[in-house]
Length: 112
Length: 114
Image (cartoon, rainbow over all chains, first blue to last red; front, top):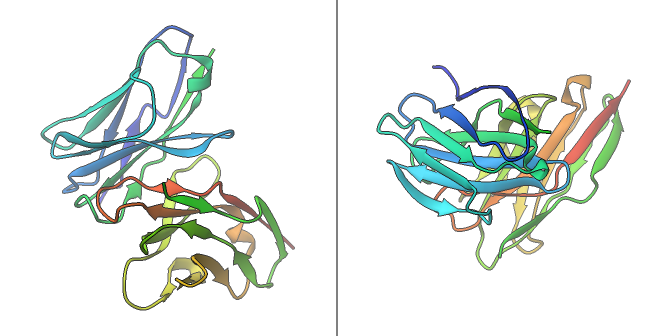
C-alpha cells in the first residue's frame, strides 16, 4: 500500500506570494492533519480534517488555510507569504480521527 | 494545555551502548503517547505508541518505552545502539485522545559513535 504522498517536495517562493501544498493520504484513510516544522518552533499542529470537515485548528494566523476533498486528498494554502513561513510542512493521515498517524516526506518551503 | 518535554536536545552514545531518550508530559489525564523518528530529509516514522493497557510498549527496530503515570514519563530505550539509529527522535502526546492533533516535544538528536 502506498504511503502518504506530498507534492511538491520542494518549493521556493518570494514574500507576498501565496502557495498551495498537496497531500494524498494512504488509501482508505479519512483523516488528514498538517504540521509545520521549523528549527525555532519545532513541530506545530496546523489543522486536521476528517471527512471534508475541519475538526481542529492550531494557533496559526488566518493566512494559513486548508481543505479536504471527497477523496480525502487535502490541500493547504498560505497567502501573503512571510520569511518566517519557511519550513517543512508535513502531512499525516490516519484511518479514523483517533487512529495512528502516518506521515508523508514533507514539502520544504523556502520564502525569499 | 498539554506539553511535552524532552530532556537533552542532543544525546551521544557509542555503538553497542544503551540508548535512553527522556520524555515527560504534563496532563491531567493519561494521554496517548507516541515516539516518532525522523531521518534527514524525511518525514516522521512511528516507533511505538501507548494508548491503554500494558505500560511497557515494544516498537520497531528494538526500541521500547515505559509509561510511568506517577512520573508522567514515557522514556525511550534500546539496549544496544546501532549506527543506523542516528536520527532525531520526537515524543508526542495526543492531548484529548480524540482527533488527530499531536503535541510534540522539542526533539532529541541521537548521535552514535563508532
